[in-house]
Amino acid sequence: MKNAISLTQNNLAEIATHITSPTYSRNDLEIGIVHVGVGGFHRAHQAFYTNKLQETKNANEWAICGVGLREGDRKIYDVLKKQDGLYSLIIKHPDGNIETSIIGSIKDILLSVDDPKAVVQRMANPQTKIVSLTITEGGYNFDASTGEFNFNNTDIQHELQNPDDPKTVFGYLTAALKKRWDSALPAFTIMSCDNIEHNGDVTQKMVMSFAKKQNPDLAQWIENNVSFPNSMVDRITPVTTQADIEYLEKEYGLKDEWPVTCEPFIQWVIEDDFSNGRPELEKVGVQFVPNVKPYEKMKLRLLNAGHSVLGILGALHGHQTINACMEDATFVKYLRTFMDIEATPTLDQLEGIDLDTYKDSLEARFANPNIKDSVSRICSESSAKLPKFLIATLSDNLENHNSIEFATLVIASWCYYSDKQLNKDGQPIEVIDAMAKELHEAAKQTSTDPLAFIKQKSIFGNLADNERFANQYKEKIAKIYNDTDIRKHMKEMI
Image (cartoon, rainbow, N blue to C red; front, side, top):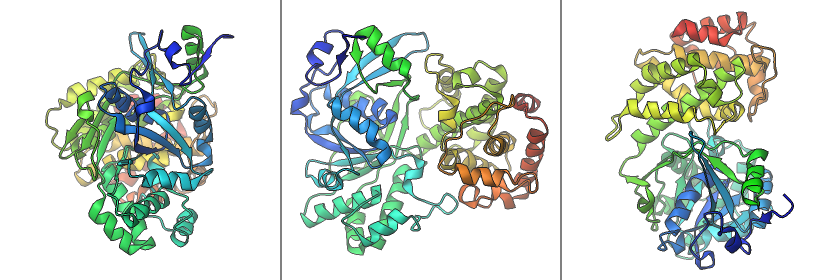
């Protein structure tokens, strides 16, 4: 559209005449949160909640400074810099209703590869009370088979020798905390918002492992002063498409170079453990609890594992989106059976949660025809995701002598997916994974060694040595490699 108005602070008053926009003064906001990893999910979730709190007019000290740590973050940095941190959030309801609003809680954005010192200074600033993270499962730099910090990472080796030249999130956190310690300032809270079970505990373990090696005295101060609350986050946020950008231009005459789309459902459960104060997010629906672990396990093993079940099996069948999987009765029944007989028995006691109602809600959310979450997005970085929720579920069921066959079919399908990279009709599958090469190399040995794929200890640990699992896996592998009609194999099981 020729006359589309650019999304900037200067144009906000005009935009606000036809799109819900911040009613608070963004000029009065102070940055209290530094957030590392400003992707779609952060903008649909934590920044959305923060914006909602700022609308109460009592949260000026909790604006966000977004940080990108990699060169790959340059595009989002450029867009948000140009748009003064503003972006559109498009909430798509199952009935076709669409809510659009402008989110204003991100006040500044930094790119560490351009100015590492500015990132350290912002974290070390006395106003910064929380550093939060959405850096994906792979960003925590641990070996999935041992759970220990990976000191072989070349960037980590560099940071250990050069504490003033950080490269990873661990280098930045310790550099900033060192400045605060030297200046006798209170520590900030480090809050993970990633889909990792016990994400706060994992973050604490990784930060402490790194800090003890880099500076034992600083590590002791961190141990005594920094809180690492566990949290559970939930909102399905598909990749932004060109159609979303064009929708805003056509419907509102608005030029937003990177809006975010999401479902209406949202949830955030946080352990109430903060070093230096926190925003009163309970005013806008966030739950603060003494122990978040049962809630996060529920979400990881039902929603996240369920997504991967649909994604990997759907990719082999040829479904392009998650809602397309949910239009297929075989996939719906397979998913629910997996949730009922393999995921649910591994969960802890959940106060105030009706699990059948929760599982019903997941089915409805996955089926939302207006979200169209791509199967390729759900399958991306499976090597980092699956150990946290699907393989963990399978391992618990092996230990307790429960059903493992539904998860095992998914693992065997992942092997075929990594090996052939084709669906049942011979169409190519896009594999997006930091370990894509290693996965392919291991999977293509399946013809000579049926267990080759699951012998990758960094992903599967010692699962290949478990006779019950190995036998089930070999049976599923033989079926898939003999006949790629994955739906047929699913039907046989349900």
